[in-house]
Length: 475
Image 1 (cartoon, rainbow, N blue to C red):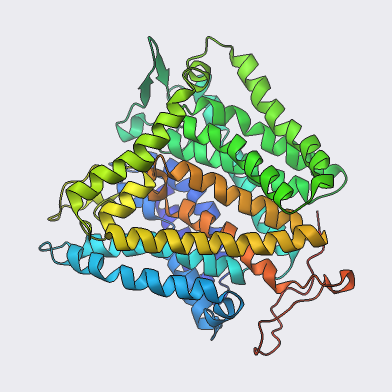
Image 2: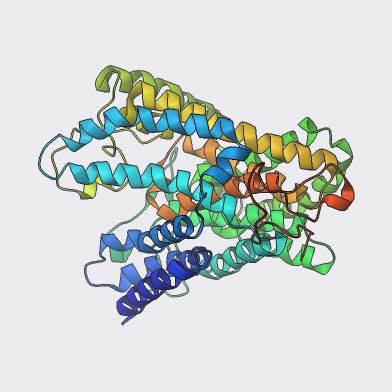
């Protein structure tokens, strides 16, 4: 019964999205919350349910393209550098596509999987650019995600305290998996809760903490403290997941946000930000103290901090050298190292790459890696220019731009060590949306304070009713 209910939500959501494309993102949040519990209850724990959000996301993209004749030109006109970088990346992908599609019977499935993986992230940047009508629409979506996900994160503490020991919904026994990690003289039991792996639960817990902080930073009155407390509740699930890279995303987020604020010349705002930062950091500290220094998870996070540097060196740089020696200048082909590709029983080379940079190199080769780095650098530079403009003007959207850009940077830092989390299409979706929403704020003018509440259309384009008519901070 749960399986059929999920199928109904996917089909109904896809149909609804074709006429109202923004609804697709809300439907995807619901699906990603329940797809793992349903998978654990389904006969054989069907692996294809990991892709349950795919039909809805594709419907969202198709509906956006169908409803906006100039869906790409609108973005390209405001950001011509991104337009050029995207063209270079598409050209660089031609050789990898031809390589993976010609390995043998069925290898075209690897090609499609790889195209979907990269395409989801990049197309969701476009979706994010067109998504906001006003700040209220941004807050509604981000708040909806935080509330729904916070409910599902309850499964982590339930598994940790063994409150529902016989339930297949908690942990990963229903998937024939037992997640553990070996420390120096101890074993860490990794917690997944309602999710299919500790990685996934840890990422969502970290995302709730960061996005809730963005909502708190852009709210006023009691609503601000509600969002801060909601983010604090995600600290315990984050600590018990047993994934260090997920925990470290939180300090990376706050460091990035503080650095961006200082670079924009907003020293006066730093004290206000620090006052808010205390709450989520205190929640992590309280969780650490309550669990105790003897806790395996806490020992793993706090012992051998030099491991972080060695992990960055090993996965971010050394793996590139080894990959180039093995795969050559053009790589092994699109999709061969995409998370989930091992499920495809097709002719393919054996690969071991897990980190983001090494995966891109083995799939796209040196030209593809350089083109993707150039594209991401161009997107980050453009997003930073938008953020800096609003921070200096102290516009009502400055907090959104600052927080969402820091969220994207924190995630990219984690992907350097491991890109396996991108096996979840929703994670790639959220990353693309976050930076796309920042780029969307270029449509808000800042020359004069009285103009902050009207939309600015790209030069040469007619005025559109679906711009951003108001970007006032709304709780």
